[in-house]
Amino acid sequence: MNLILSIETSTPTCSVAIHQNGELIAQKLIVEEGGHSKQVTVLIDSLLQENGLNLSQIEAIAVSMGPGSYTGLRIGLATAKGLCFGLDIPLIALPTLKILAQGFRQSQQEFSQVRLLPMLDARRMEVYAACYEMEDLQEIQASKAVILDENSFADLQGTTLLAFGNGAEKWQNTCQHPDIQFVKSPLFPEAQFMGALAYDEYLNKNFQDLVSLEPDYLKEFMGTQPKNKSL
Image (cartoon, rainbow, N blue to C red; front, side, top):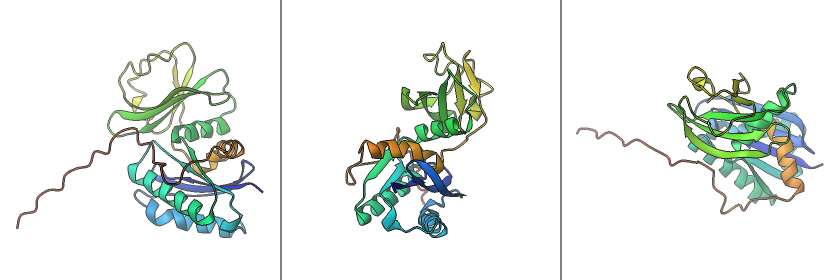
């Protein structure tokens, strides 16, 4: 049946979905900041039960590999790896921004001859961004961390760019780019958008190594030092 389970945990939205031959069967989603570790396996179990399926029928696991939340990405990948190891099935890794771009393609069919600029918030005036062709999601500019100013993406000109995602919102008032249009949705990537991408990887046997694969964070984690407590 070519059933693929997809896991997306790169943002506060935690979602899982099942696709058959790239077509969506069902999705479960919850928005809870910091709740991925508690919710992802619960969502998977609930998704399978509600659709009369069990893990033994899943033929591959697809996971969002980043960029995004450090903790969320680690939880998603660890869950995917554990399932793949236990079930002896392949692991598929998908770029988070490509998933977001695919979500736009599925919901906004009226656009053509444009390029997509999915953007995820990376705190302050920084975003994670990439650029893709609308028609086939050919990569024009790879995922990278960008500090936004009025001249950001000046090297991408000559074709209409559609900017979307929760990172695009904070740039709309200061953007001076002549070719950029802002679109309100989708704001976040979701597992339901992963089906066609994952199925293509599955058919081409583009699988990942369970030991060596790490999330694509794009930048180093900047934690804060705990304050010294007085005795």
